[in-house]
Length: 131
Image 1 (cartoon, rainbow, N blue to C red):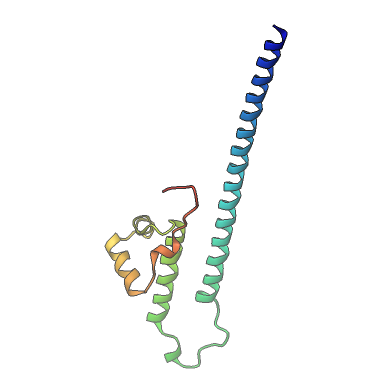
Image 2: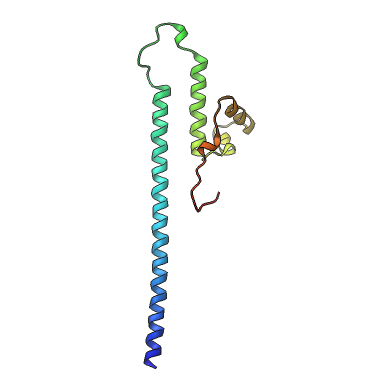
């Protein structure tokens, strides 16, 4: 009788140990996902900052003639910057990016084609996760 109780007690401990290991593993995976998300956001911030400096930073030399400063090319560069940031924030979703930019989806799609921006470059696929 004592042997059966001990076996039952040991099997309960083994089950409890397995559950704790499973819980510990899930907790560690959750922590790892949070770290990855945090690193991804920080990388996006750095990328946006670098793009912003490259696109909107002060030029190394001041333009010497009016032809060197082109309004339309600067507007185009700004448009590209905004669209890329919206796509980054929405992980490549054109619908969400259009809403974020307060424009129609067809307008965004047209701009993506005209500016040669591929929205799929901004979608992030994490193994084991489905959207």
